[in-house]
Figure 1 (tube, rainbow, N blue to C red):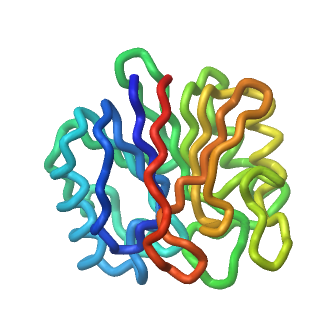
Figure 2: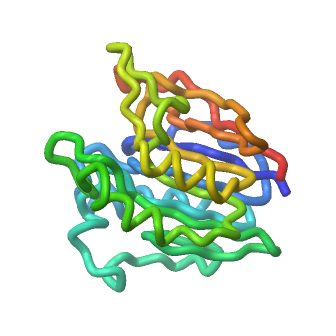
Length: 206
């Protein structure tokens, strides 16, 4: 199964997306989170040729936090929007969450510690592919200021359940891939910290 990973496109749809079986977007599909931006993203994302598509929201995507789920119009039956929820595709179990540690006045903010841990406790132990917007602590989360800003409680959960793949974004400058304890971690941010289109989608075989 070939999975194509992208994140943090922020309304920029001028990307060449590699072929694959599943296309995953790990949030920040928009710049300001307006309905117009969200509708534009969904229209673009639905047109991608991949058999299955999955996305979550990110901290820029205010509309997803404010709107009722039935107000989000998705016409493609092979497109899954995950919001602290999961899906199964050809025997592979996916779970997605937009939640992140509090970061200024953005969407889906939760306080570190017990408050955010409640959301990570929802992740099933048999998850194969975990999709979160924010990274785990000290895994592809180093900012240009030299700070590790990932979530400590998320890291504990990931090390506990050991998914095959954990994809995220949020920290643009930490783009890349690493493997730890048999889990492949991918920061799939396509824009850099200055919001320039410089990074390529990452393709993983699972």
